[in-house]
Length: 143
Image (cartoon, rainbow, N blue to C red; front, side):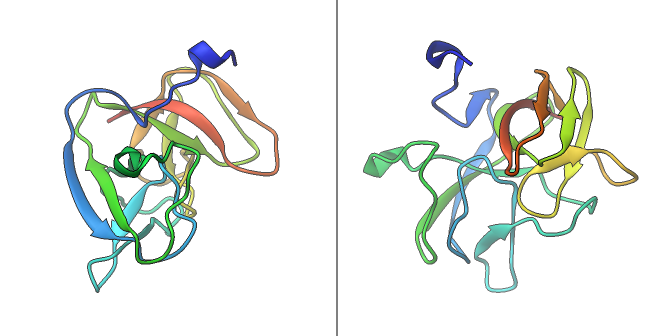
């Protein structure tokens, strides 16, 4: 994808509500879907195909970080609570071939995967064939 076509922000369009929480683990990346743990810290959504709030981590641009920079454990993390129609730059699980309109659910590792029998949270607004060994970026619209 050309540099001018690659988003530099997680929020592509819409008006989600923004909140803050401490990162409950290291390695949480902008675009990961998160949930709050019992201590109120943000951790990646870890239940594949499970019910999920539509909460996505944003980049920490206030201190010069980009969408490529992960949060450290204990960092102040900012996340969006998205509503239907909001578009975000999320993560797609490996071995998933999403086409425009594919319904996506939690992959259990902060990303999204094609719906199996779970709870769809978003639909793809671009085609991404992720045959790599890691999560790949994908533009999605929240359901």
